[in-house]
Image (cartoon, rainbow, N blue to C red):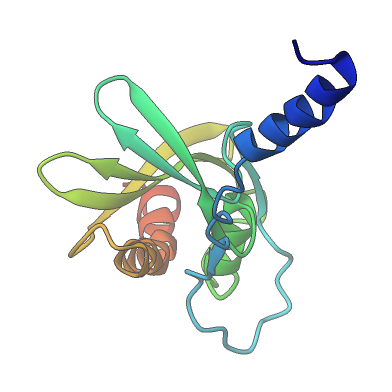
Length: 166
């Protein structure tokens, strides 16, 4: 019969051998989709807010009901700051313009595309603006390129919807 004092070291050894060291998690990758900056004018910045679930992690929508957040791929700033930066050099925006970022995500279907959807409020009316740009692949670098293209089109789309009326 084995004595209790001999069993405890054996149990300790078995416990330690059961604990395995998992490989380290892959490092977080950061992406900056903002267009190149030029000299800013004296205009005050546009007020941009975003939906509560939008953050720096990549958001992927698989229609009709699935929404996933990839916490290993992140933007360098929250979506509202990226949209505000994309609008920084737009000169024709109304002074009272406020924008809510409703979608800042990738939509997966037949193709994968970057989607930026905004609600633009000015002069007592609210206008939706949606920009979509296809990604050539689902590689993170290509997703970032598609989002950069979408952001580069945001100012044109906002001006067309808000200033020119649609």
